[in-house]
Image (cartoon, rainbow, N blue to C red):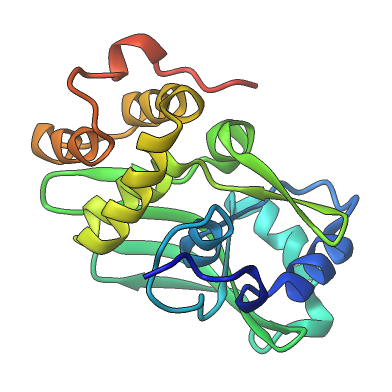
Length: 209
């Protein structure tokens, strides 16, 4: 299969979203299938929605800016291994989910999205019709999908990391150092990324400010 053509990615929704949130002071990143597809990942089908991540405090400001597109109000969601504040929107025909304060806890591992501290500064910028859109670091996608046991998405993120290790391994190391992954889960992350040694030792656990 070939990577999903860009025309199947909701670029118009991304542009309108970025324009609506411009100057609001909150930091957010795009993750999930859209973030992977924008980088050329072969997912086998077009992204079904847009996943936005923000810290819980910033999610409040984002919702205020997106109120005209909202289909519900922010509410705490605790399901299975996940905890977050979720709200949903319809923008330019695309379904958008805003995930605030996202946390994952399995029997042996834990992981929290720290958008201001890590995901935003470690991410990459993509342009949607001239508007900048910040994407989650691929290390986040890999860690998250290892924890939710999605080997297809692990391979997609891992393959992209392997293509440009110089751009992604340092960020992966920092995210691993700040997470609470079990040795088994950390080893799986490194294996998908094609890393033979523990990159956590080089990151010091600090994300750029």
